[in-house]
Structures are given as structure tokens and as C-alpha cells.
Length: 108
Image (cartoon, rainbow, N blue to C red):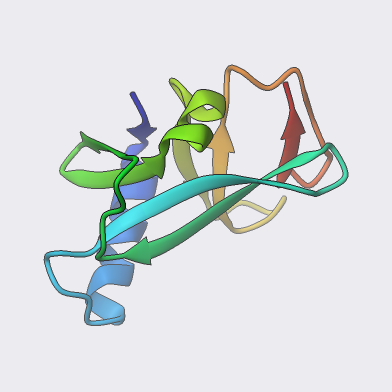
């Protein structure tokens, strides 16, 4: 399962309205090789499902990931912060054994 915090939910809903996305759009999250810790997160809006996609819904937000990425993202929460330490989305991943200081890459 993938999860979304209340703050992330609110920001995603705001972005959907700002960008004028259709109800068919969802949040696509994935993991790519790269970053200072070896793996990095990717997040975008999409409206096309692929054959190996896994769909999750939390708090009314649809989250989609490919099967390979899901293996790294099991039980991960998508959060949003407006704090002094940086504004934006970030992932709270219980599978990460190490994360970089910026929080955009990790290793398992």
C-alpha cells in the first residue's frame, strides 16, 4: 500500500485545480537509479495506466506506481511540508536504510 498524508492530499487537490487536470488524472510515483544515495524518487501527474501499474487510493487520492518501483515503496507515505527546511513533497519510506540530506534519494 502507498499512503498520502492530509497535508499532501490538500496540496495535490490544489494542484489538480491549478493545472486544470481532469478527474482521470492521478499521482504517479516511481523510483529511478541515481541521486547521491543510489535511488531517487519521481512524482508527477498522469492519466494513462501501464500494464504493470499498481493503483492505490488513500484519502481520495489515487497513487499509481509501476511494479518494480512498488518493491521499493511498500508502505511509503507521500507528505508535503511548507517548513523552513524546504517546501514541497517528500517521501517517508520505511524501507530506506539510508537517505541523503536533501531527502530526494535513498538506498535499501
